[in-house]
Image 1: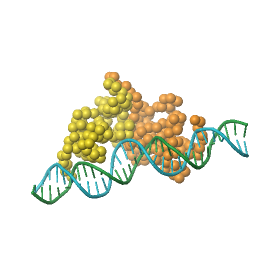
Image 2: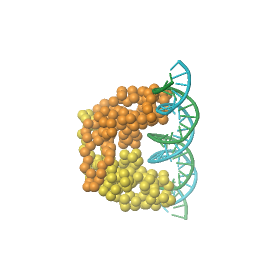
Image 3: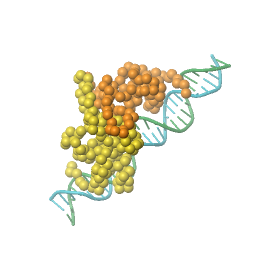
Image 4: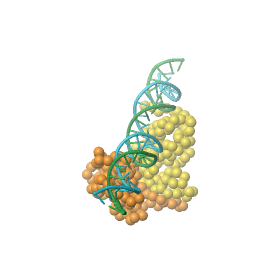
Length: 123
Length: 123
DNA sequence: CGTATTATTGCAACATAATTGCATTAATAA
DNA sequence: TTATTAATGCAATTATGTTGCAATAATACG
């Protein structure tokens, strides 16, 4: 299943590149209003994830946010840092700080999802 | 708006007390099948939250989980610990470890939501 | 360039989690 | 015992995301 370059794909990729932060489907949809269907945005984003171009993270508001992969290698997406979601400007960003958790005996760790909500320095 | 004691309220409270872990609406609903409506479960749980009887935490599976408040005081719910969700038995539990995060300059912290998924010692 | 292949799209429908409106029921106070 | 109104059941709605399918269009190839 070879990928094809389409206006929809290009438009969404541009938005992600200019954002420099994680975006939800609905905020992307707002920017491409009229250009493409709601479902297409979801499908383009999910394909980016399959291709290792983006992360997909479920935020503490119950929505998925998508961000370009920067420090990820092909198979290992780097998620073990804190995420910050601003209640003012709605921006989501990755914090430098790694999450460090020690599980009880016999527990095995699969994934980590750590969110801090509040107000960023501009809000 | 004074609260009333109803069979629904009592049943849900009993389930939460026996569980000693956080439960999702659907798992509670499964236990009271036929006794009450789906919506009633939601409403009973939300009222518990309003009254400071339970926490409501959005897990990294996108669903809300409810747990009795233990170390919370009236106004300050204690949420700043890690939560563990077992992919085997679906149980959600609060870990002892507190989440410690240092935000960048000028950022204000409002809430924390930290999840670890994996397998517990029984799974 | 013209044509064939099939990835991509749009639209409608569906899935799931949770909430809301409203008439009815029932817990509490008098 | 009755009045008040919180709580309930049911249907409908909202919100987020996915799936089926026919139509469209990006790419490869002669």
